[in-house]
Length: 175
Image 1 (tube, rainbow, N blue to C red):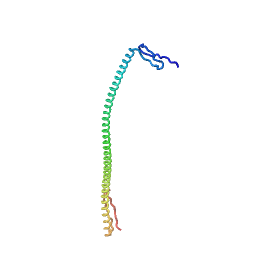
Image 2: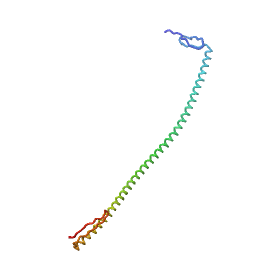
Image 3: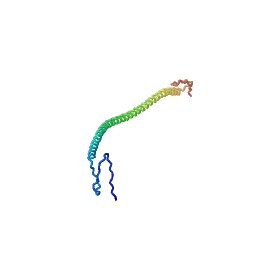
Image 4: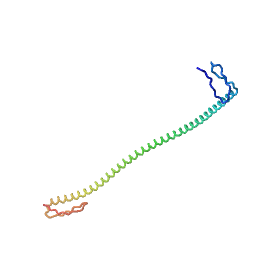
């Protein structure tokens, strides 16, 4: 293989000399180039340090923001827990109200049953009074019939029966 010398790119025009074909190394002979190179390295190091410092500053600002968000999240979490406790309290209160309403409903049903029983008792009492009046009337009629039988009266007798529904007159004849 043939060995060719490679051209190098540089902003300045240095003088290059090849040193021995076996090593294929190049050495720069220009002082200006070495000085420029060291200035560029120093500037690159300063730029790198500035970039690192900027990254550290941004990282610190980001950490501060993350800490603020974490703090706010703790506040939100605390509020959520407080709301959850309130929801549980409201739920328990609703269950107690539901139980109270069921008890009131049962009480109203019992009162309705008692009212119906009372109304039925009053109706029964009125019916009992009417039956009592009718039975007194029937007792009187039966007593009269018995007396007539005992006396054996042949003449007609008028019996008047009275009750709540009115009075009726009937003629009886003993035989």
